[in-house]
Image (cartoon, rainbow, N blue to C red; front, side, top):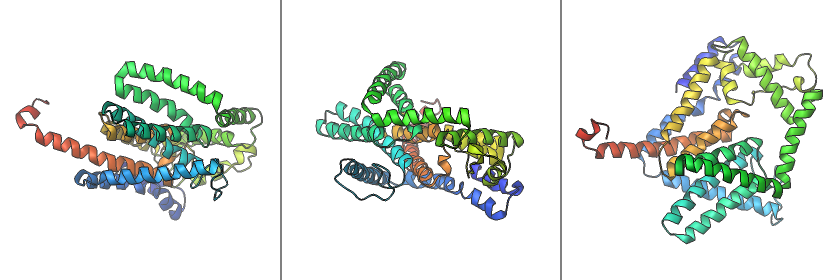
Amino acid sequence: MLLWLLGAMGMLWADVSWSERFGGLGSFHRLLTIPLFLAQFRRSGNAHWALYGFLASVVALLMASWALVLGLMSWQTNHIFGVVVHDVIAQSTIFLICAFALIWLVRDFVFARNWRLTICCAILAALFLANILFVATSRADIVVLPVLTVLLGWRWWHWRGALLACVVACVLAAGAWLASPYLRERVQRAIDDVEIYRTTHVHNDVGDHIEFLKKSIAFVREAPIIGHGTGSVPELFRRSTLGQTGAASKVSVNPHNQILAVAIQIGAVGAAVLLAMWLAHFALFYRAGLLAWIGTVVVVENVVSSLTSSHLFDFVHGWLYVLGVGIIGGVMKCDRLLAHELVPSSERKFGQ
């Protein structure tokens, strides 16, 4: 709510039209639904239906993606191999969240000796990860994968688990690199784009992102404390392309970095509030259990991937974060409230 309030105040000093100012504030609006979802699902017992529905829809998307890959289905609207709807980044992100949720479920079912559900969840998790590594993945999720793997090991067995997860991540990364031509091509293309940009400064995908990053840092330096105002990002990028060629002439409406997207508009003050929001949401899920782990995956994926994208301001990723934090966070708050009410006041006094 504070981040939205700063965004609203930022409209006062933006040097753009009021339509652009309100357009910039529109990116902040969905954040206001987080406390509403927290309040709703703190009192509602129906959060599991939302999560089951989400998983069922993503499994249907997974089956459709593999059907396209295997030639069992020809319908496709976006002309991207293996991607049925949205784009590569959205599909990869959704599959990644579900894969790590299912991995936790596999552990729970093994402890419960429910071998049928263990096998089902393990197969689904493997299909999600295989789709990411062999069919469609975003560059950001290539980084998010090992981060979540190490964090999962930490949640299970602390330092010993984190070290074991590092070893597992290295082994799996080597195996994926050898087995997946798609992954090798994806990484090699990014390396080539960086080298081409460094030597010629011509327009390409990664080179454009580097150019946006440089310009965004310069914009922040011009107004470091309170920023240029809400809605000013597109105009700043338009001005920066005047008389430029190559990658520098590419116009963008966002810096492809969430922290910079906030800092350009409402300065270091806004960036500090953004980081505090992420930290508060991470702390909300810092406990044991499946739901807490899913919430952690949602937050960590958003934070890490936002280093190369403005995901909170994107429609699919923004709502994915808001719904994930709001619904699961509401259940976390409900559990804590019940636990607090069940502890006698004499024990609560001593923090027991």
